[in-house]
Amino acid sequence: MSSKPFDWKATPGLSTLSWVVYLFLYAPLLVIIVYSFNAGRQATLWEGFSLDWYAKVFHNRDIGIALSNSLIVAVAAMILSTMLAVTAALGLRHARAGGGGQITLGLILMPLVVPEIVVAVATLVFFSGIGLKLGLGNLIIAHTVFCVPFAYLPIQARLTDMGSAVEDAARDLYSNEWQVFRRVTLPLLLPAILSGAMLAFASSLDDFLISMLLADAGQTTLPVYIYGMLRLGVSPEINAVSTLLLASSVVIVLVALRMQGMTKRKS
Image 1 (spheres, one colour):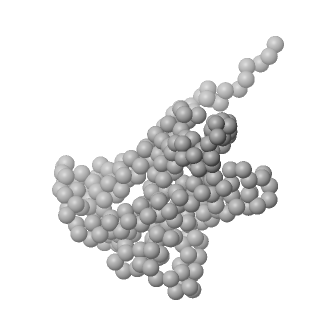
Image 2: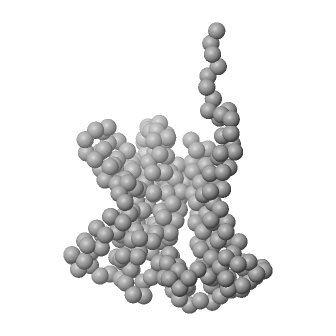
Image 3: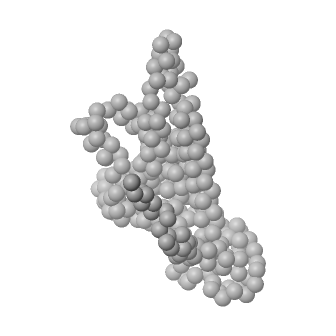
């Protein structure tokens, strides 16, 4: 008589423990969202519902400049990192299991495991050493480097799932390599490319440490500006800015997950 296999999902109290963990993780974010609608000036003393702080955020010129810098850097880093990720994924697609291919893959993914403060300090020292002063260009280069792994992983996963049967069929029908890429590979890969691009954009938009160390005067990004506001104390205006930044990140991640879902359905 065979014994019933262990099902960890049936562990007593697991569901309750999961909700407690979720509450611990997301309660601070809920508090910020709720107090962003506070009518009073106290950040943690509820005095009624109001949208005044959101109106002040949209009329704050400095926040507008910081947001503009963030969007410029995030869009440029997203485009460059996605192009590099697509090139790397296609180049490493048929690489051998050992040797140079694995070393190259490790170098591409290294920014995911290296502490961000180490990357930020190393980038600052390197740029200072070579005298590179491109304004926002410095931020774009630095953000592109750490965004490549976020764009690479969905694209690499999609290429693995695709296999090569469809492309081989196109070659059997006398399509050249460019036609195979343009009419077969790229359409099948497009949802993963968009998903990787969205993740890269969100990673760049939310970055603080690298932007903090590399940004010069007039190049402040939105996360760095929010940190500067915190020095004067937490206010409902900070809560409103943080809520908007959080909402934009959630929307981007949801779009990326939607793209990944489309990729799986096509598979």
